[in-house]
Length: 257
Ligand SMILES: [Zn+2]
Image (cartoon, rainbow, N blue to C red; front, side, top):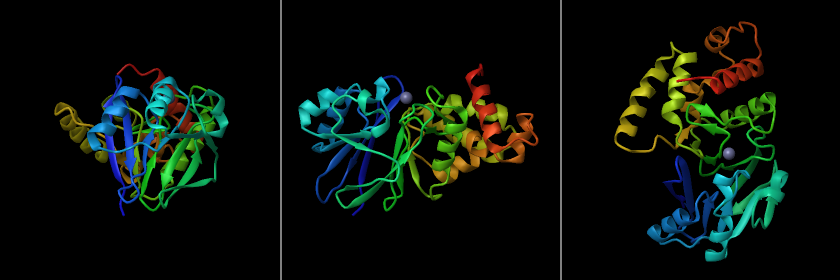
């Protein structure tokens, strides 16, 4: 049976997400950005939390862990690579692990770069992935701990998931990402069309995510690092995808949109 997925805004621009299996009642929170918001979302849906699936150690993804765990008795799963930085962690996972969520397999994908231990949770049968701060709609996370080359490989892994895979991301950054994407990929008609949709959603106060792999492959400049358009606009006509990716990510860090 299909999972119920409930996304809610919290903090300044984070998203919380609850994943619920209606047969067993098992319910996971993807990260715990803000305890009060997670607990309120559970109450609103009438769901009992069994798990927190942590993507990475940043405070705006784990600061609710202990309070939510104390209130619900949930089990916290998180990346082995940064387990020492994740409050209340009970179980560590790493690349290649498949864990069970009420009969739904969950593949662990290591995506280092934003942080060194960052992971994504891919539910292949449900065609959905929770990618934290690795990929955003039209963007990718800042490279705080890893190298640009590592981040490219991580972004590429997400882009290589099946096209129809729905992507839930950690933040609502889409509108400002669109301004940058348009600056580096100005002739992409799919990007122009997406800009109109984004503006209209935000004008109505609605989220622009989840997105999916196909949409990101067509419009996300980081996933288009191998194209002639991006090589040319970054001034690297013979650049490798990793080099073009690094140039795009560096330009974004300095972009005043
Ligand atoms: Zn982060």
